[in-house]
Length: 143
Image 1 (cartoon, helix red, strand yellow):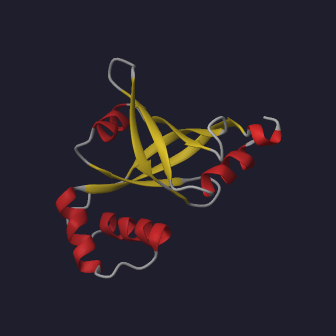
Image 2: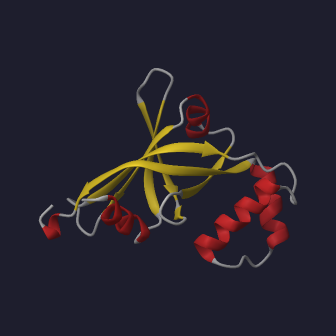
């Protein structure tokens, strides 16, 4: 599969497995929700104190994998990660980034003040993933 075909599979979904590297080099896997923002970036909302966030601060390499229409089809994006700032105030740039993420994923929130307060309380931040390599298989189409 070429990069465009892989991105098409990612655009069809919303949940993926994110792999980051622990200090000892072994993978750490997390299920995440993501948004494809154009052709060169994916967004994920993460919390500051999680293993994936600590791993990405130390080593910005990440891999996202989604399944296809059948259990044998899949798409993978190897990425460079960029962690945004942690939301520390309901009106800071980090909270604004998380609002943009939510809107892209789900549209309007019924109570933006509550959402922003939750982002600060959770110590959330926006993870931006920039693909560096793409591959996969769509066996319905012969590979």
